[in-house]
Each structure stands twice: as structure tokens, then as C-alpha cells.
Length: 314
Image 1 (cartoon, rainbow, N blue to C red):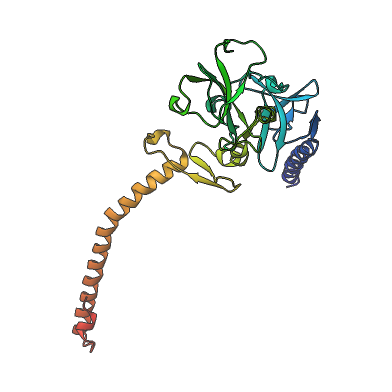
Image 2 (image 1 turned 90 degrees about the horizontal axis):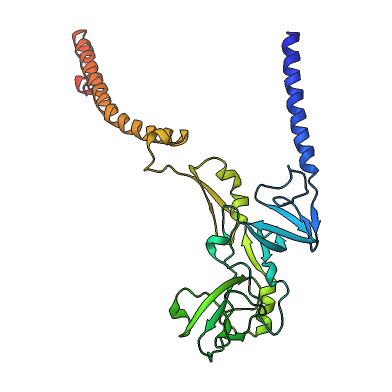
């Protein structure tokens, strides 16, 4: 018995040690800082932080006292991390030093596919700022005249007019005749809108403000999605309320279903089988009980029982 208790005590102490070690490791994850970003904490981490701190895919770097996110082979400056709103504000490095009398061309074109992933999603509050070239001057308050600050492959020639246009442009009919979009960037700057008149300086300020990506879904749904592909995490808009639903794809072969889906599948089959087999059995039991009662009634009559047979028969 003493050996048995010793083994149990050893296992208990080992498990306790592991738990305490993990707890201590987590408490050692103190917030980091770099440049203007004074609080870098879970799920984010700096490259120089301990490996157990932060979450995979949220690693940041500190370059020349500037917090940097390397995302899909693109480099962005981190302007702000909003832990309550689950958003991160990023800036294309080329737009950092925007000029007053000319417009800087971005290094990265903004697109939904290029800027979204399993971790980050597009922040719907961002506005599109389109770089537009036209073959002739456009007389419209929506088209803000500008020129490019440096030469690049898409810079217009001298007979082309350049403009900045705020708002989503989905097709050619959304543009003035003879115009085309060279590139587009996003901006989360407040105060700009396609329905509001803007100056070149205000758009430049919006460009240097940057855009936002949302990491709410990945962070809040991590426990639900860790259960497997059979679980679907639904996050309500503008809310932190999640619903972790379980579903089984009807097109998936039974052999490839998860254990829970197999249980649901066979439970349904068993339910049908229960009705098909159970109803005949129930009828047989009722018939058998009626015959038994009738038999008992006959025996009671023979023995001189005064009870009425109509009260005993089914």
C-alpha cells in the first residue's frame, strides 16, 4: 500500500509542478514596447519576446524604433493596437512622409484578398482612397487634383490629369469618362467620406493615418474552432458575443465524419429503426396483455368470481 500511495503522490506533485511552471511562464509575459506602441501584449508579441508569449501569427518586429508587422510578404508600420476593439491600425511605409503639394504613390495596393486571412479581416469602417488618372480634366468636387511626388511605373504622363477620389469604385460606370483607377489604399481616418467635400491636405492626412484590420474573430473564436472542423463560430456584428455551433456536412461520407457527427448520424438511423421495430412490438404487447386478461377473466368465472367480465375484457 505504501508503494501505491508513493506513486500517486509522485504523480500529483509532478502535475502540480507542470501547472505551476505554466502559470509562472504566463506571468513572465510582461507587455513590451517599441516606439509609439507602448503596450504590446497577448495575443501580440515582439520578435525578441519569449516564445511562449503571444500567439502564432501575431508577431511584431521593432525596426529603428518603429513597430513593424510583416504580413503576407508586405511590411507595414503599426500605428495603434486597440485591445478593446480588437483592431490594429497599419500604415504603408511609403505613405508615412506624405508631401503637401504632391501625392505619394503607395507600395502596396489595397485589396480584400490581399489583406485578409484566418487571423485578420477587413475593417468595414475603412474608406477607399482611389488614385485616378484621366485623359482630360474633370470638373467635379469629388475629384481632387494632385500630382505624384516621385516617378514610378504607373505615374501619368504630362497630358494625363491625376486625381484622388474617395469611395468604393466597383466598375467603370462609377468613374468619369476617360478615367481609370491606378491603385487604391484604405484609410480609417475619421472625417473623410465620399459624401463630404475634402481637400488635398485632408486626404493626405487620411493617407498617413493608415487603415485598420480586425482580429476579433480569430481571437474570440479560438476555443470554438479548436474543437474541430465540425464546429462553426458565429460572431455577431459589432459585438463580442459568439455562438459555437456544431454541424455535420451532409455531403461528407460517413467514414470521414467526426465522432460526434457519426453519433448524430447513427442516432437518426436508430430513431427510425426504433419506430419501425417498436410499433409492431408495442402492438404485440397490447394484444398479449388483452389475451392474458381475457384468460384470467375466464378462470375467475369458472371459480365463481362475481366480477363482471365486461370490466376485465379489453
